[in-house]
Image (cartoon, rainbow, N blue to C red; front, side, top):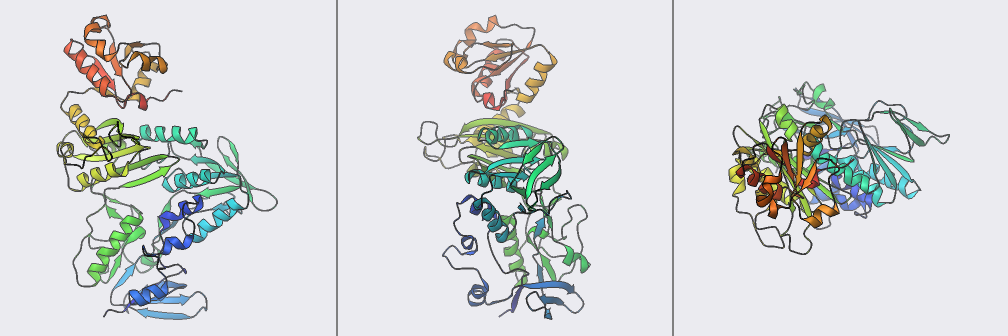
Length: 534
């Protein structure tokens, strides 16, 4: 029997914004599908009135919140008529807006952001009108999905990212390097550590060129994908508390603002991070939907709390799937943890089952508490299943030892008998317990470049060794099944790093050499899949 009113500035009430890149790509055939329910009903004003008994004021701007009188001053954007809407309880769900960088030329034609259905429609129209070259400014998740969409539409594409690698707040540099290699192999140019200086147009007012501090890129279409900012003006004008660190509306675990009669949720608020304990800006549709449930419960007499986020996300770009949860290895160190990471290549199904695909799990744990801090999973196979398992472990504060013994579903069409996540957990346990000594590919490269005494021992089969070798003068080859008998051939005056395709044989080689009396032995974390030749 509650009277519920929605005030909406635009004309579209409810749509799946995360589907917009897939509309540009052609996977979603009609924008209306993004506003439909699973059974095909359009979530428009009529639907909300008939099914939800909710009144909708579309094309209506909320001008200000009058907290003393408990009213919202509004203006109809079509007629200009002003009005006042009373409330007992109010919800602010103003979302976020694209952050447009202050560079010359952003107002040229065919320069877009991607945030609303009209944005997606305009971009697709430009593609269908003959745009042949696109430049995506920003290498975050939306930027990568857009690049994938352009590639799918046979539009030549380049990505320009200001920071040191793609997905800079999502994955570590070693994971990003694999992604960048894949994207480059597929014909999309990647330019990291580059700053866009200006956009240049032609006589028709359309963008023609992107000028960075290192190069010039021809462009018929430019997508600005440089992040979003929470829409907090309405809350600030009403003197509600705003977190100065995140720039978001401050809320408690009930999603109540500093005014007990006003709640807020979605992309305009921050969330508690379950690993770091800090408030973070975590704009995701999945999180916003959970916020809606919590707020709805609390508005109607319930007592629901939102515990926080693990920072889980996933993206698919050019055939590679990338997922993360928790914190990265770098973020863990920056937050004061003592991180240990295990990098484990594997398959998403049993290796002998048709259709199994390559994935790599990077698991991050705290050496002091053994708690799981985060994970990154990438590859052509099913990464979401693995990241969801780790997200659950993080949510419940599990140690890596519990993760290693989870009773996960097994049958060859679904996973290996020991799932990739369990293998990664065991690899991390081996490191924590002093059994495994691993060194990253980046550290090996540093040692080679510095001239430090080092011997790289390739323990693959002769056929594997002949097909591909590391380009380094200090590489020798002893197959694993011959290592026990030939360990005496190895020099004892230099550190030895063992390598193999995925790390398992290299780890076994490390243990064999340890047993033979060699002390300065480590294996390359992640195997040959982690090694990027110049």
